[in-house]
Amino acid sequence: MASDSLTITDNRTDRTYTLPIEDGTVRAMDLRQIKTGPEDFGLMTYDPAFTNTASCRSGITFIDGERGILEYRGYPIEVLAEHCTFLEVAYLLLFGELPNETGLKNWVHEITYHTMLHETTKKFMGGFRYDAHPMTMLVSTVAALATVYPEAKNIHDPENRLLQIKRLIGKMPTIAAMSYRHNLGFPYIYPDNDLSYTENFMNMLWKMVGPKYVANPVLSRALDVLFILHADHEQNCSTNTMRSVGSSQADPYVATAAAAAALSGPLHGGANEEVLKMLDEIGSKQNVAAYIQKVKNGHEKLMGFGHRVYKNYDPRAKIIKWTADRVFEVTGRNPKLEIALELERIALEDEYFVKRKLYPNVDFYSGIIYQALGFKPAMFTALFAIPRTVGWLAQWQEMVVDAEQKIARPRQIYTGQRTRRFLPMEERQAAGAMKK
Image 1 (cartoon, rainbow, N blue to C red):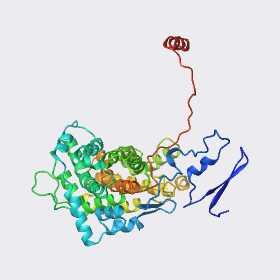
Image 2 (cartoon, rainbow, N blue to C red):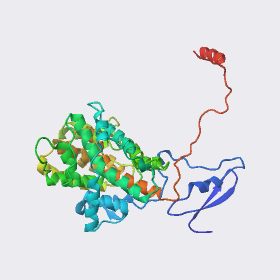
Image 3 (cartoon, helix red, strand yellow):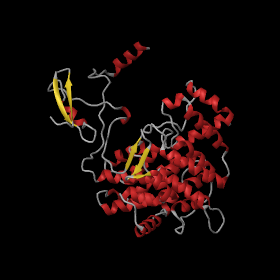
Image 4 (cartoon, rainbow, N blue to C red):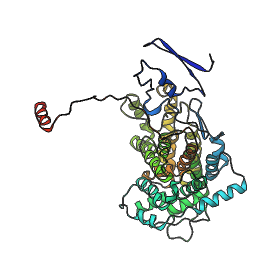
C-alpha cells in the first residue's frame, strides 16, 4: 500500500477504499466509487463556499495564512512593493518572470498604446444617469467592450488572447476615471501617453483647465504600491468568478465584467468603504474603547479585521500602514488615522481578538489612504478593480491552457420534494382556499 494514500472504511457496507494523496489533496471524483449499491450515485463532498476545496492548480500566487505570507510567482509581496512598479508586477503575474529593462520598456509601451477608448464606448458611458455608481458603470462598460472587439471570442489563439489582455489592462484605468468624472459631471479626459500608468490615471481623474497635470510623485508611488498589493490574491470570490465564467469559453471582457461584479459586493471589494463608515460612527479616539466593547457584546462589527485566509497579520496591511505615513506627509494627517491606530492597538492587545486571530487586513488602512488622496468612497471598489484585472487575466489565461479544466459545474444536495402529483387548476384553487 502506498504511503501517500488514504484508507477509508465505509461503515454502511464495511468496505474499505484506498485513495491516493497528491499535493495534500484527494480527488473528489475518487470518492464516487464509494457506494452502497449499484443504484447509488456515489459519495460527494459538501463544502459550502469552498472553504476546503481546491478547484485548480495554479502557479501564480502563494498564501500561507497562518504565517502571514503572500508571494507572487515566488516573490514576497514586501519585496515587490518596495522595488517594482505595478506594470512590472503585472508582467510577472502574467508571464511568470520579472522583465528585463528592454522587456519592461516594450511592455509599458504596449499597455500605454491601449489606454484609449473607442469613441462609441465613450458615448455608451455618457448614456448612464448623472448619479450612476462608478462601479456599475465600470462593470457594464467592460462587458460592452466585447462588442467593440468581437475577435476576443477566439480565446484559444495565444496572440489574440495576449492582445485582449493588453487592451483590458490599458483601458481599465480609463474606464474607471471616466466613471468617476461622469459622477461629478466633469468632461472626460483622454489618456496622456507621456505619463506612467498611475500618473496617467490620476491625470484622467483630476486634470481640470491647466495645460498639463503634474502628479505628486509620492502620491503616484503610493497608488502604485496599492495597485501592487491588490493585483492578485489566489482563489478569492471574484477570481473564482473569473475562472467559472471563463470555463464556459466566454470572452475575457464579459468574464472580467462578471469578476468585477463579484468584487463590487461589500464583503469583497467594498469592505474598505465599510471601514470608513465604522470610523465615522466611532467619531473620535476617546470612543474606541466603548465601540470595542460593543463588538465584544455582539452589537457591532469590527470592519477591516480578520480574513478568510489570514490567521496572522495580513502582510499587505503592514505595507499599507507604512504607505499611509508617506501619503499623510503630503496630504496632512487624516483625523480618522488616530481612531484607526487606537482601534488597532486595543484589538491587538485584547485577548478576545487575539484568541480569534482578528488582525488588520488590507481593507483597514486602504480606505483611509484613498480618502486622503481625494477619492470618494463610491470610487474605492473601482480602484480595487483596476489592479485586480491583472490577477483575473493571469488566472483566466492559466485556466484556458490547463488541460484538466472543464466548464465549472458544482454538485448540489437536493433538499426539495420529489415526484409530486400534478394538480389541475380547479384542484389547486380548492387546495389554496382550504389553506386560507
